[in-house]
Length: 171
Image (cartoon, rainbow, N blue to C red; front, side, top):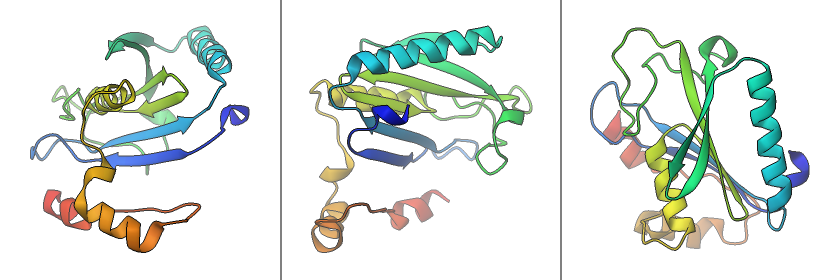
């Protein structure tokens, strides 16, 4: 997979869709692969094959006209800092109430030169809609980010930005 990295990598934490105490934050990883689309398709096919050979469940889901692979990962295979005790989130980020969670889902999609990984289908739909030219709000459209970007991040090789106001309001 390292050979496919040919551009920007974006890591995002997305807020829960509701104020429900059990609603989970989402996460996304966006990887730019430039003109290596056929190699990405081959790597994703290889991942699915190996996942199936190891007897792990996976399924396909269509979001915004793109095929997404949904991998089910048992919590014992996730480091404790990354796992959630709130249940498996649905498309709105609300945890299921069927008892203690035993696994999480990781979605993987390929759209043009972009590889998208994450845990909530609602976040995937937004990214894929924007990728296909849809009008979906993004971080660059937010005034508080624009001010920080112009003042602090211009010309940076890497940066991290957190909207603490929104984060604290959710906590």
